[in-house]
Amino acid sequence: MRRKAGLVLLALAVFFAALSPLLRWYAFPRLAKVPAHQYQDMVLEAENATLLDYGTMRARTVPKVTIVQTLKGNVEASERIEESAGRDVVVWDGLSYVVGPDGEMVSKIPERYIFDAHTQEPVHATGETVDGDPVRRGGIEFKWPFLTDKRDYEYFDAQARITAPIHYKGTRDFRGLEVYYFEQTIPWTKVRIPKTLPVAGLTPESVTETGTTRWYTTVRKFWVEPLTGAPVYGEELHREELRGGTLLGDRDKVTAFAGHVKMREDYITHTVDLVKSQRLLILLMTSYGPWGSLALGVLLLALALYLEARGRRPSGPAPTEAEEPSPVSA
Amino acid sequence: MRVLIAAATGLAVAFAVVLTLTALGSPSGGTSPKPLLTTVPAHP
Image 1 (cartoon, chains in turn cyan, brown):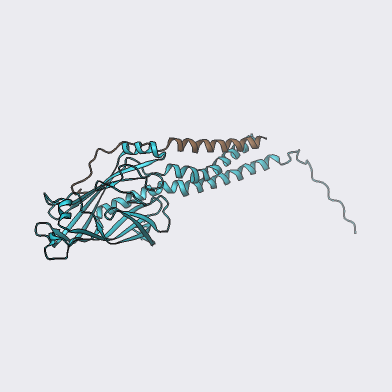
Image 2: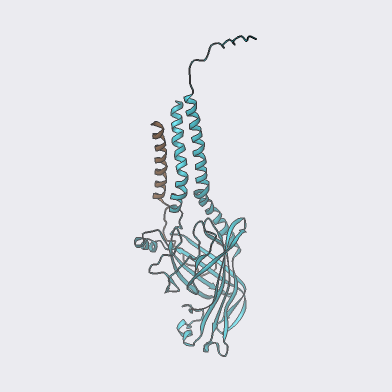
């Protein structure tokens, strides 16, 4: 009976010991992925921002500009791309909708971001667009990979439509979470006029005909929770200018938008709570699970060996009387 | 011999469990019917 128990313990010990690396190195890379059907929204605000009044073509300070950003997983599109790509793909249809202090639309820029569900590397397929124009992303956007490294990443800027490094600037504490802080600076760059403008009748073509061009610079800051790769907070020092052309009269340039954009407080709390729960799932697969399983395996192996050792101890009849000590003679 | 069989059984079950888990994967839902937002939501 004892020998049988030892063998069962040994089988369990091998099971748990083998489970440890399998969980971490086989199951985790395959199971950790961004779900294709995810829907998320985010609200960012810039207080005391500068905004162009298209009626007077003059910049004015406004109490608040709000940016509503939505990302919606398009399952049908991802399944279609997966067939040719041969890997798990996520397609996010996104919209950055900017609202002025009066609640009216300032700009809206749709985009489609296609990426590998496990690594977050961009996947290039038809439909990869920003504001209806085809683009080719050379880096991540919105989310970092699971188990983010302390290094620079390539990050896609949808306004300038370029991929540029986003630099790792150190580890910080953000509301009780250890996060990696990243920063990217896009220098003044000539960018396209958005397809949808806030004034009826004003089109990118009509603006271009006047010779006016749009320029943009930003400093983008992200606080990223490294296990999930999810940003828990973001800020942007964003500036846009219209330069030259007859649209501006005798002026060289006018500010179209300038503001310090920050995530709204209720969205920060919501994001931190969400990331904390997701972080636990990642820890279960990368740390708690593998280490716990390994410890259990070692414990069960020790127990199995102990039972085996006890089972092998000679079990002859116990001596009935003690031997007489031999007399000592001097 | 029995020791080897016990160890092999433990190993095989570990592989079977992990392979089954990864083969099942996570359930994939459908595209959300919610629209891309053009108004400022009151809360997350």
